[in-house]
Image (cartoon, rainbow, N blue to C red; front, top):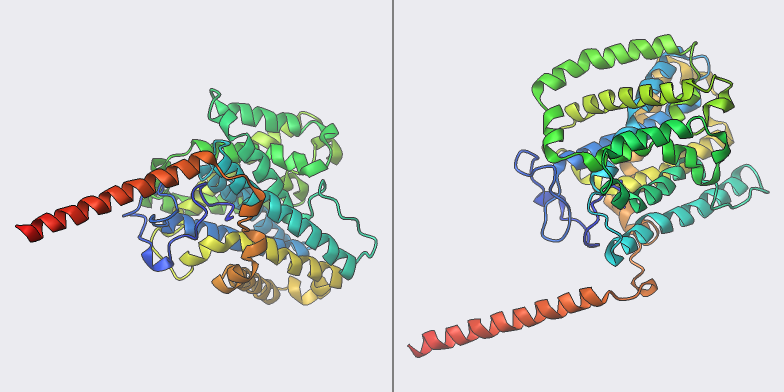
Length: 396
């Protein structure tokens, strides 16, 4: 998603879309950067995941009394953010707290969080609450993901050092689900309860993505998703939707304490299965939307303004949205808006706040300067040898 789903490498803009190759020719481990080709599979996955995020936020406005929409909503919320987070973890494997990586974390995650937190707070002041406060400790709406990504990436060296990192992360998530004293600062409940998805992404390798993209898995995913929809339909009158948000301790819902760890582990298992089904159907070749995968952070951060404005202005109060045709129209509109917000023109206009360079704010890395100087000297020696060789050929 800073792209927050890009690997931590050089800051330059990724290769143009016409230089991308199908996943069959470019393994999933291929990272972006100068002279490297983007992997179409991951760009497709990021784009489709962010479209589902936007669609989910649109459906969330029309849940009241609509069991069909809530069923789809629950299936979607079981896997769409876990899929996004798993990809984030996969592309965070190289994070090592070096100056270069820390700079990228600040400019690609921390700065956009501050900028958009202020922007969302001001938007609410204008549209709904003139007295709304600006608080960097209480993430607005979808900005919790940037807080979480910042924390997760800082802890990456820990997960790459300890044995059995996934069971440890699951234990932390389970404990968080029964610890109401954690509070709402930086939305730490979500940070901790979604942590296993990020750690899982750190552990994945290219061959794991190849496994779930086999034809047999693709076929098997159809009855699995159908079964998930049936369970979601059954759960609507029996289970609070808030469980899927992972943003509170179990005591806040009045459920017994032991249900926290049980539901945490169950949701993680369901998320893993449905995410595998999602990856199984992500195309590996270049599609018309592949290039949009590089701009998912723009779609993610910007569509929230429209969603919130719709809530403040009462756009979704019309009963027509709850009818089948209205649901279809709303779904198409949400997907179209997300798609437009991921395009290159939007990226060019807002790159200064979403992906700022900010070289002025950081010390120059002495090691990087030495490497640049060494490369320059090597090029000079190479050119001198080439010139000398050409001169000898002319003499002969």
